[in-house]
Length: 420
Image 1 (cartoon, one colour):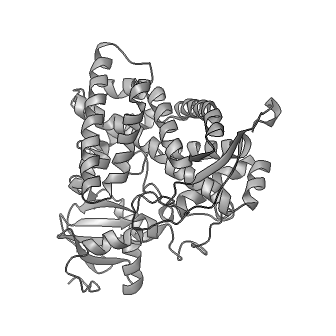
Image 2 (cartoon, rainbow, N blue to C red):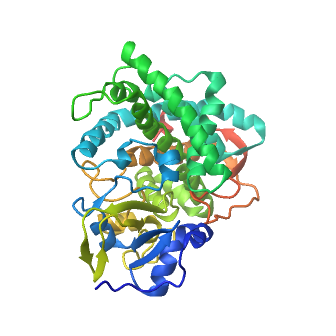
């Protein structure tokens, strides 16, 4: 017989929207349990937190991703038919495509484009008095990733494509009009990219680009993916890259709140990686991830019945005091001094990247963040004026309320010897 701590509420959807990232952890703490049962949007759901839960959640024989994500997410953030909703051999073959796209040499080529675009925009930032860093990075990353991916982006459409890509992120976790706007944005983006896939099959795209690799990809039965599914997967390259603007903005925020680290990172470029890792732990992007029980089993005295939706708390696991010393403190040295268990650190999912549902874009995220730190520290000076830097945990994905306003931006003239 399953033993689960009781929740008084019949359905917890309103509490989830009200509490956001802290929803699962709040209840795990109150119930003194790493698993509890509830209903979310009237659907029976098991919620999990912690290192042991991560190790369970990424066992393929226990869970499936097929039809696991809520429809609102599939129609906005992920798309229908993409790699996130596959399992088994189909998932491994599709995941191999993304591992090819994100090979280190290709990631380095993306960073070159990003840094070139960043430096080209500095004179404009300098002349404008103030900029909102998050908005600027959204546009900058959109232009750079499209160029890198082989996607044609005309100057006059750049603003709309960026707006639509951001809408997929902003609207996915929001009810009502924002979610409806995100669905419309996805339809526009899929039509746009589906057309580019069809063109790439007639007239090859740049060799080795994401567009070329996706257009040429074959399913396990040997057939090419449909233009619509190819567009979904191309969006699974563009959208997460643009989303890293949040992590890079949080890196800038961490520099502002931890001023002693500015000189430390200038003096020791190797410290940028643990700093970026701590940003990913401390400032979350994804609050949760979701699966369904493949076959009924028991874990820690709890029955996991076939077909039940299961939600894993990424945010709470990254702040679990059983795995992290003083998790509420921003401390990058923990990634140097401590041996971090893989299942305790899951900012972009857990498990093995090649065979399970860990995000293949982690390398891109870290490269973009360390690049942003380098540019913020070496290529420009700026001030952070008084503004609203509060972070609302009910807003998913989270962001500083102001988007991080920078003023008095000045480009720094760098000599070759100053490049690190």
